[in-house]
Length: 445
Image (tube, rainbow, N blue to C red):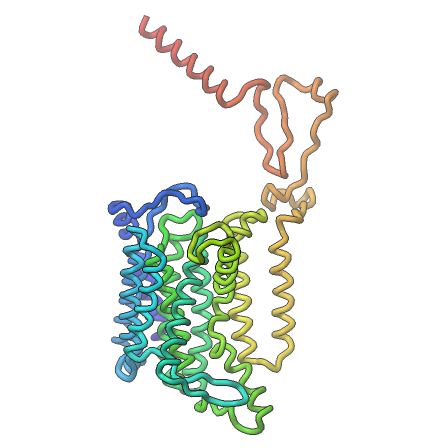
């Protein structure tokens, strides 16, 4: 665990320190596209944050190669080199897209080529564990097609969800954390060395996201762009492929006894293996809904719009930061809920906890529809929108007021200082400017 934490910290440090210079480089080369109709930010923001994330990946792999407990991964497996090759290719395509806006079909072809490069170097799905049946070996073509499909779907799912400041990097970090715990459990508890590459990939992915998040939280100073979103999507897919298709389920010794017992034993253990995309269930749902919505409207599945889940949260009335936190909450609930159930499937407390947290999540989703008001004694401790409305004076009371008009705050907003009646910002500025001009004229005379 200490070596994994060291690898994570080195990756995070390199990514964090390089993001600042990369931001200046992006501004210098003009990688700051104009505001589009579907964007939620109001000022042009530089992209190319994926450059810092890619060098963080390289630093993490280099660090792991020089650690005693992780160097064996590079000696016994070709998966780290396969990951680096595919990541370099997809990162290069993303950099070109951030600068020159590559066509969507060209990007899709590049994603398939990057997945094919990893397959050629051994990072592919060899078999699938099916509860109650056992291990089902895949042919070369079946494994290749399944691997390419998983990589392309995961890349585009992460790319689609990258619409708010800190959303994609935070959700992928949560998914990588849950996946790291699961892979580490297989490697440490069961002694399965084949799970070591996936554990290392997840640790490096967490470091990349943690190092980039401080620069990408709202208001973001830099975006990761396609060079970053496609990169972390590929690494997440590579981790799932490594542990799904490379770890032999027979080594877990759960396919023993009757068929019913084997099915019951295999179900909780293989949930993350058979359904690795549950760790990115929210981006995957967003991807499917986007394709259905655009196809139904007669548009291309790759046509951009403002119908994503995070856009819907903003339309409901959530703020930018709250929308991101809600997406974090649901991602963590699904990822860690699946992880907890795979470890202790017999405990009903886990199921009850998941149901209770889901109810809390639904309340958070509906929060803009029901704005609570805090009691008088607690108004100083809550945001202005939760404070009670002040009494507005009637017409008779308004006549008795001094020449300073008072207006009650709207929507529970903060009280403002009284402003002279009939004076606005424009008139005040005009009066000030006139006084200043008269003084200058008097000085000259």
